[in-house]
Amino acid sequence: MPTSTSPSGHAPAVRREAPDGEAYRRAMGRFPTGVAILTQGCGPLTRAVTVNSVTSVSLDPQLLSVCLGEDSTVLEPLLRAGHFTVNLLSSAQRESCARFAGRSRPTGADAHEELGGSRGDNGCLVVEGALAALECRVDGTVRAGDHVIVLGRVETLHHGPAEAEPLVFYGGGYRRLAPPAPGPR
Image (cartoon, rainbow, N blue to C red):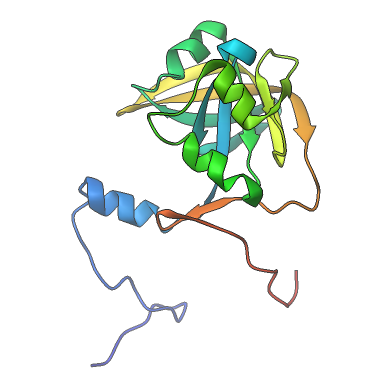
């Protein structure tokens, strides 16, 4: 059976379907993302949750966005305090990532102890071993369906080990990056 190609030479999408919740989740699962743990508070007040919906929004001023479910136990304390930290995870932090993705994730001193790290300038936990940590002040929020988009103004940056590999989420699972492909850059 012959297949047609687009002007770019690539085959078109092979299947169309209505965008119900599961179909949408499958489609978005085809988009690789980095993974982070968002922290609010430190020590006995630590709250932490795994997120993969982190986006750089602006360089001037430095803004990022992160999406939290409207029922997230981290959302209300974050909005009340007005600050949070986004900790970009390395591939070595896969277990922590999975642990803080579930509803039964630890809080308070247990969360702080499990993640390790220290109190940042904004009072939130900077996770030990993260590729980078971005301390943010809440700059705005937008309700979007069953989530809240939180805009964060980056006030302090921390850089982790340069040789560490990022943790990547793709197709419903955690992945590592392949070595760079040869060729022009």
